[in-house]
Length: 336
Image (tube, rainbow, N blue to C red; front, side, top):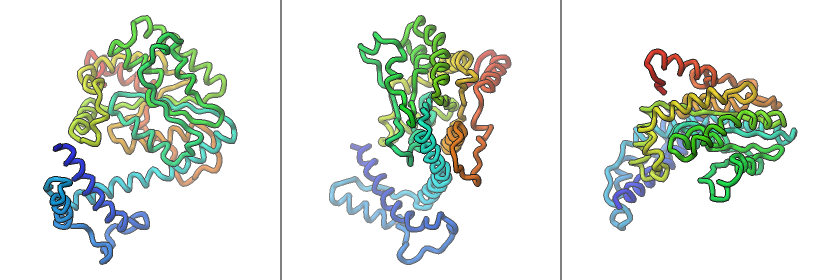
């Protein structure tokens, strides 16, 4: 009950504040210091308290403590400006999608990485304005008993794109290289068979004209811990927290070891990995869009945009391997 009340209170506060911010954030915030007009009067702490008190009297939520409007305004403005920065690149993604439709090319984008590394949020930003008739997001669940009897890649092949389509895998066949061996969801033989066969599998896809983009989201242990804490205490995010998440911190070194083996064995010239430093979610999202846009020669690109990924955010798989090997030489083990 306490969490439900908190959720209701936060939603009401956000609703009241959103009505105000939508009024003042006009003309793309050309002048954020423009005096507020009379019809743009901001909700004050007392007005929010009165509204909440009214709701309390009606028995909908308990009496709250009003938050700082200034803090909420600053947070909302920051979020607004960041989302606005993505929009020109989201428009380019629509052009890229049109190019794929015209040429009949197929695109597969793999989103891999540790739990809470920002994969899902990035997928939502990438696809936000795309034509939903020509893209799909695939998040595979646990294999069924029938699927367990099949060739490992078979269930993924069923989800592959047709001509002109983009398929984004929120985790992919690389579960067999990362999560499954760490948690004992596959045998040693199954793991070795996968590592031995995946390169040939991807090489055939590329040879047949499929564009494959492999993204690995890399978050630090400290940042992952913070995100797990927010999931645990925020009733709107608790559904994201799974038993696997709970153990992710404890098994950090195990994940790092299999990450190294995965990159070492599967980073190839025809199907390379791009490592995305994702402690800053916004920069990760922005640079992922640049990586995707650079993968095809679509027409009428916006020449005023910077399409060069930030080298501090986007790291090649080979560079990441060099970094990890240097860490092991200095410290005796991988650090991330």
